[in-house]
Amino acid sequence: MKSFKMGIACLVAVLFLSAVLAGCSGNGGKTESADPSSTQGTAPNGSGTAAEPLMEITILDALNAAVKPGADNPNDIVTPEVEKKFNIKIAEITPSGGKMPAELINMMVAAGNVPDIVFTDNQNIGNFYAKDAFADLTEYKDHLVNMKKWYSDVAWKMLESDGKLIALPSGGDPNMDNPELASRLNEDLLYRPMNNFAIQVREDVLRKAGYTFKSVGDLQQELDGSPRRVTSEDLQIEPAIDTFEDFEALLYKIKDLNLTANGKPVYPLYVPGEYGPHILSVIYAPTSGFWHDKDADRASAFLENPNVKEFYKVMNKWIKDGIIDKDFMIDKADQMQTKIAGGNAAVIITTSDINAARTAVKRSNPEDDFRPIPWPASRSGKTAYVDPSYPAGSANIMINKNFNDIPRLLKYLDWFYSDEAMELGTWGPESAGLWEVKDGKKVFKDNALWEAISTGTTTADGKGASYYGLLDYFAPVEWTSKAFAYAPTPPYNLQNYRLSYPIKLNAYADMQNFISSKMLARDGSMLPAKGEAASTLAGYYWSSTVKKLPIAMMAKTDAEFDKEWQAIADDMKSNGRYDEAMQQMLQEFRAINGK
Image (spheres, rainbow, N blue to C red):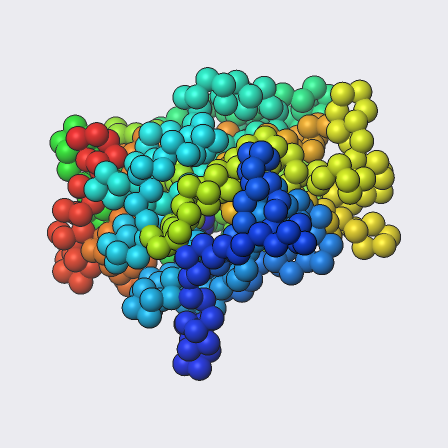
């Protein structure tokens, strides 16, 4: 899905590959003796109490094709402070160059050139650890005093293999079972948990269909006047859309309106072609991903999950009845965007540019918008999830087993989860002179700089957050200094500079978050692919199976649907190593759920 699926083209020439392999050999945590005439060799370590020799580290970023922009910023005011504090310097960064993590790491392991730190995808850490190139970090977990505060037991178990801690967390979901952390986050009006998709309805169409509700615009006015969190009461709709039957009734009411836009029909429903049905299926099934029925202690996935077939039969009926634009299965992203922004879709999940679509709707009537609505209860009777949450982050860090001072390296990496680190990465050091304290709060001295930082722009002389290597919420990679861009970072920044200024909330985004964050599986009942066979199954499903499903959805009769469905399901099971994958995933589910 949008945050957990990757497809990276492999277009790198053999000569470039040779250069990568030659240039990224791990140095085992190379240290240099302190030179009495050099401050580099005598800087204090993370505790600030003892001299440490300079340690140079190499990094492989197996998730990004190119080096992150902040890595070569000459104006970075943050990284020098981190280097001085720990006397640790990033000596070399190797990006993926467009290769998949498994392909790249397999080659480096074979060549004996694995860098000291490797950023990779969560679903592959078990496969990579099995190659005997990465460290078992179990005995060092007590060194992670800051990280341990942030993550749940489920999160840590997702970083284990056979009970061994094999990777470090980065991003993900904070542990709300930690009272101290939960208290701080609950008091912070800017904190938002991880989220994914929500069903969204055009407000003008919803009114015409006979529903009453609080509009996005009305809620925005309330939040502007008195900032607060969105509540379930803000999202109430009358009549309620609580069940599948309620949702289907909405679609048919819209159909009966016979609406048009730009001389074309307004379809009640439009979803993205390949992944839209997969997401929407949770109105009927517990999930379309890897799922664990805890009561039966059984693992299943994709087309074999309970009620998934029944949902696709509903899709077949909706296509026949004109509820959904059947071209959704072949439309490209720009065609989808044109239809949604042009007013030809009443109910959607997402589009390539939702803000542009909202603007287009408002252009016709400034009081209208797309309004997120709560997901109806699943027809399956089971708790339904759009996607698994990665409570330890979907991108994790593995350490070369030959690194010569793992405790010191872990102290460095753990520090990035501290308040001190977040404050430095957000505001910069005091010596830079960018901020001052007023009324007990840090604020930027230059109002023009703050205006640039808060709007994602730059000052007249081209300065903004990224210019200095500070936290930049508008940048592709928010932590823009070299040190922070290549370190694990917490799920949320407790030193957010927005807290120093009048809070401005976004009603639409907060409604979306309130709804969709509840649809992520945080209890271990749904997981990403773990292990080689499960990864093979997931890859086959997304590369092949989803392309065959339109054959079933376009079937003319129930008998034809059943025949086509069975052929597609059998193909997925035989070519996707389904039974082997389920054996593998069942063991993963049991390990995470303590069985």
